[in-house]
Length: 198
Image (cartoon, rainbow, N blue to C red; front, side, top):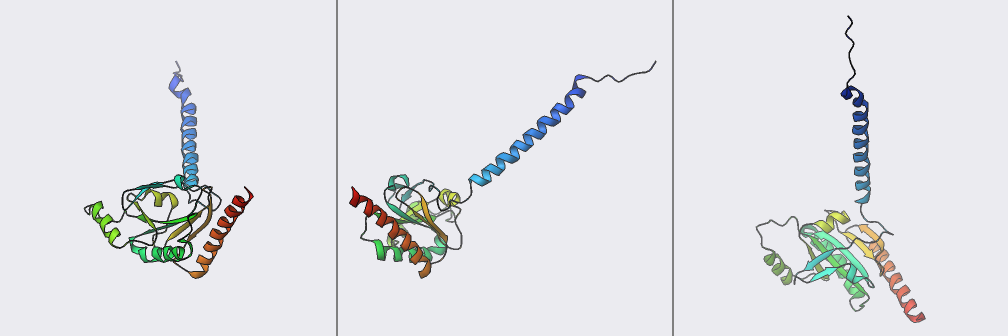
């Protein structure tokens, strides 16, 4: 008598299981690719990602609340503070008296050893205040979102509507500052002409 192998339910389900595994893996790959695309650095034309950070006096600042103003962001860390300050000093020289535009240095403080109290850091910054507002990114989340450069400042200029109009990763250079200034003046001029038409 010939013994025929009986195809049980598990044997017939093998192609189905293989298909499910393939679909799942493909789905994971697609979602991973989407995630990588979504977390790319913000670029000119994008809406600037919002943030909520404290200054040295523990006052909170958010990008959303600054809508209606031109905002210049200088992102750096303690190793490149001198370069951050150069950008801030040039900005202050030209725009200190103009309330429609503001600037902030956003400091990446992830490299500060955990045993140093935050109050001590704030105190040191008050003794040596930067030329513009100074926001403390203790966990580096804003720097991660904006994908900043470790060795030179990352610069963003944001319009009154919250759109990025200028972006560079650069140490201070007068020709790059001239480009930035041109964009700031253009935004201020456009806002001024709108006010005149009202």
